[in-house]
Picture 1: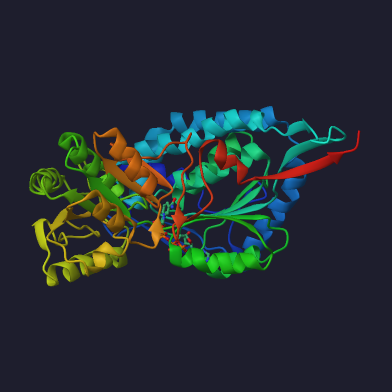
Picture 2: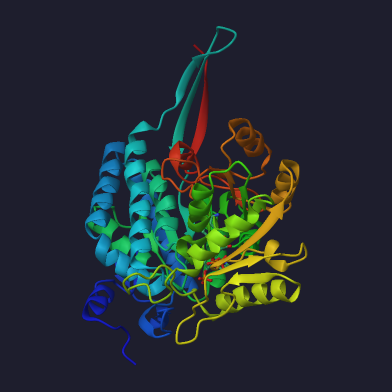
Amino acid sequence: MAATETTSEQTVLDSVRKQLFIGGRWVDATGGETLPVEDPATGATLCEIADAKVEDAKAALAAADEAFKTFREVAPRERSDILRRAYDLITERTDELALLMTLEMGKPVAESKGEIAYAANFFRWYAEEAVRINGRFTVNETGAGRVLTMQQPIGPCLFITPWNFPLAMGTRKIGPAIAAGCSMVVKPAKQTPLSMLALAGILEQAGLPGGVLNVVTSKSSGTIMEPLIRDPRTRKLSFTGSTEVGRKLIEQSAEQVLKVSMELGGNAPLLVFEDADLDKAVEGALLAKMRNGGEACTSANRIYVHESVAQEFSERLAAQIGGLKVGRGTEDGVKVGPLIDEAQRSKVAELVEDAVGKGARAVVGGNRVDGPGYFYAPTVLADLPDDAMILREEIFGPVAPVITFRSDDEAIARANDTEYGLVAYVFTQDLNRAFRVCEALDTGMIGLNQGMVSNAGAPFGGVKQSGFGREGGPEGIDEYLETKYIAMNV
Ligand code: NAP
């Protein structure tokens, strides 16, 4: 079977180096083994990439450790310029990067372009922050002596990223780390390594010194990363992925008392109050639910609607969701691509079957889509019983469960009834209610009358089992800096 369908697809695939990027050189994995990358829309193999072994991962950390010694001294303006050049290169190459991302991850090309703009923006934002890393100087409260603080790069970092946003989940970490003067080893998800390999090529072209960024791809993530997490040269781990894996990595990080950031799973509630502008609420719910085909940690997982507007809201949402074209992300007009693999599709199908078996109703969708690839029909579920698994678990697919509520207190209590706390969405036109509800929700982020919160200039992150640490904004660079305090006797 042909790996790809058009010449431009093959050209884009051919343009990416398929090796490991270690110490500024492209190298094969020890033993020369490779692993396949699949197109989730067809199930066909797109290409083979290097399958790193423990020795390769250790070589990557050694390179990062060596590079840190000099990169920490590189002038802030120079670090800033590298990021800015990389931003420009990504932007110039948006079309080919978007096609590459769609091929490996499945989302429609228009959405891939959106992710590329978002991803690049972390480089522009942190190019601007690199020259604004400040300390402070104050007079001691006794009047004798002074307090001086300085911020210094933390050291070699490990980054582990998921498949759902193959570029942005990397640049959110790489941008601030470079701005701060850190070096790093990045391990992208095995399903979507190509975008990260392309990014390594771009950073190389932008003049990033060899060894500052190292990329290892592998089908044995746990085996190759655990020794690095336990290695005393590593000073920071930043992970984006599932809560289950995050928990394991936190345990491993305890050995060296690593500074850790965890961007984990979500179970986002979206609340529509009776005074909401329903046009905005439907539009916001559509975006919060269907962006990335529902495969987002920020995806609206539970849509709570006041009983007085629930029927109208559900019908309007179902009309919109039912009208979305499903297909390969490279085709015109497609709004929903395939899920990443059969395991993910089966999980979505199981959650829907469980809900329907317990009395829920599929207003639209509720089935797999035949043919090659891992497609699932965009779905709206109503009349959900409280014990439906779908209300507890992260769906990670194009399924919108709509539940009714009667009072603000009930809506808040149900929204907070989860171990996750990443993001919530609130639709109301009443300012007092908006503040009251936003203050009462146990989440790291809230979209108020909007269905998206992602923004390079804002602190992205969660509370409870959605993790800790923030990415983006001025807060994002703090994850890569240590504060040193000097007590001055003057
Ligand atoms: P995952 O299974 O946890 O995998 C994430 C990354 O961890 C992948 O690179 C994976 O490599 C690697 N990994 C898996 N097991 C590992 C181990 N034992 N040691 C070291 N690395 C390991 O998550 P996913 O299915 O890729 O991504 C979906 C999850 O990410 C969802 O829960 C979603 O909510 C979360 N997410 C959170 C955010 C956020 O900002 N909070 C953003 C996006 C996604 P392999 O590919 O080899 O398995």
